[in-house]
Length: 377
Ligand code: SF4
Ligand code: SF4
Image (cartoon, rainbow, N blue to C red):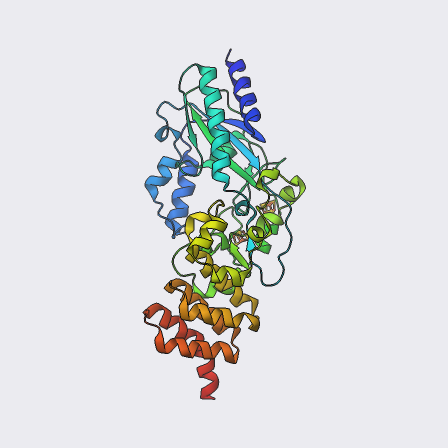
């Protein structure tokens, strides 16, 4: 009977759209709690509001569902073909260029949960997907969906690491799958390719140095990190793109293909000029939508600064004079200083006389510093 229930649950998950499904025990995962707590204590996720209490809740599915006995862990592959963006366009991480995956995942997870409830003849499930606290990588690893690589993502031997993870916690007792006996071995490709040094090589990451975090935070991007971001305007895929099992896995669901070329690689000047209504029209349906337009304009400014193209100076100068958001103007000032043409310095000098925000004024002063040095010679 128990075997039949397990088989029916696995079949229901596959029928609902899971590319891989395995089952873990719902017993609290003390090593995951310790790993998370240590990472928060080191400040690896200092820009996010996590603490020891969050670590304890995330490692124990009983906080999601009292009486939990099993966690049904699923993975859906989302890699779709990518092209190197043309000059003047920004790069977007593969997970964010399609329709917002949260909606698609929620449909799959709710369908599986409904099937499990039907199999059990009672309400025995709770769905977790990004919004509820659960250490999903650790439970995916315990279930044997994959192993956590040195880039800190779960690597499925068949699907690679471009996978969305989701969990259904249930009070049903289902026989668990064993963890995989796999690791990265001597490979260091992700560590070598990371432009910011975010990966330590011991399967941990300083997320405050990761481009994915830097492009999503709302506070200013630290000046020393800005040149390292390159042309990424949302997320970063470099460490997964070079990962051998991920490369071997090929592509996932066409459902996660870019909505269009502009969503895959937005024009940076157009992005910097974008206003609220435009942002909603273009990005509300994607995973970029939740942070708002100013963060994206800020990121476009950094990418334009890194492009070092004098042709971008007029649009940057316009943004420095007129963008309503100080965070955008401050990063635009940095971009103009980085390009460093006479026209860029002229725009910075003009803005210095009218800018009222003290942080932006400090950014303008810092951007003008090379010119001051030159003039002092
Ligand atoms: S996503 Fe990019 S910045 Fe972050 S660890 Fe990977 S390579 Fe480094
Ligand atoms: S690139 Fe190599 S070291 Fe990094 S996660 Fe993949 S297999 Fe592991």
